Length: 590
Image (cartoon, rainbow, N blue to C red; front, side):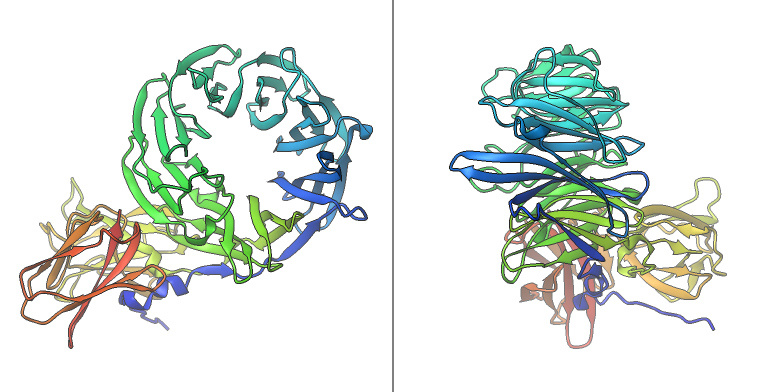
């Protein structure tokens, strides 16, 4: 039996928040400790191999006496059910105090650990290879030009290992053979698609950004910001991000030409920020995560697409990755009732949080450090009272739950060749697909004027994906669809839902019956054009969490200006109402 579900956007009920897919406990957790030795085990990195196994790198640290510590490298491999496959405890036969700082995995499951020997005054670098079966295959403790410092960053690119130490940058092949070394003091590096290294050199050097070609020779240098995060895009452009003295994002193109800079961000604390990141998604958009409690998305040309609050993820370290369907995955630390708790979340292309996982194992300290994702679930490692804990959350990609508040229209246009056809572009902000979807347009008079027979023309509408529906339309020449209703159906019309315009799109003016609001997005104010003045309307503004942040009566005038300069950037819901009528809008505050 066909059932019709017509959802009216009663935004003040905040149904979109209540429908957020959430897991309040992991599928399983595993403590990684040094028992029977009770020394600390600090989490470093977690990664998946191609067979849904998860590897966890930890640092063993035991204080022998004040200022004297013992280090070991712990590497453990779990299968998807949480069973330990093997454990490697590497102490170099008690010599040198080895410590791991970073890790990568090749396509057959071999693991490469970047670290150092901590026993000497200036340390020594360490590169360690562990087979997929848990055997130590080889180690390297120096290069032709680097004998001091630790390898604290490793990148695997085109079957080459790129390593960074404070004393230089080196490249090895997968057999541990050195290709080249450049003794250039570096603080951060990235590797582009062509195998070139972009590196930020240490403070005080007049040249603080360089690029090395595939032979290790410098082919570009510039005086720029002290980049503590670096990302590259599909075009081999590179992005530099700093937090001192303030946040700033700088772009250079692949030729090394400066393109743009962004620095209009909220300030952080006076000691810098250890928990933020810059990454590039599959659309070549640039994402800043954990910038004083916010996320920002820029196009490659530097246009701000949106800024959103990251809420309670930004209390410590931030781990961020682009995962399936171009979703942004973030692991962070939430402020809990008795301390800090683990939280991880997925965000769609509009910056909406569409899934979250939460874990509280104690009432003191739980700092998320890293995450990894495969098709069986999401794994997060945390520092739980100076001990490594691995938590696995069930895969959210097969839940089947659809929140229709995350589905919206981004554009409508007549076909350029056949005016009897209309193109409606719809964004599905959910993780999951819509099956057998169709779209209809209903006029303000209540007549269905597009896709009258509700034909399905797609097998599915992917999650986190924009899709254009082309259907027949019975009325030509419409130039403004803002007062029209859009219906989306799933499963050959079994469920029909009203959807609105996407709030994150830059609609210059949004009209609804008696009112228009603009500009949207807004900066310090927005204007309400009141075509129904003398009807005693009031206004309420709600945050995404449902908190009322503004309330007032509208002046009985054709135009009201609303000051929102005191509101944080993000998505808000506006309700205009009197005793008989209510109108709802979405507003993006920049």
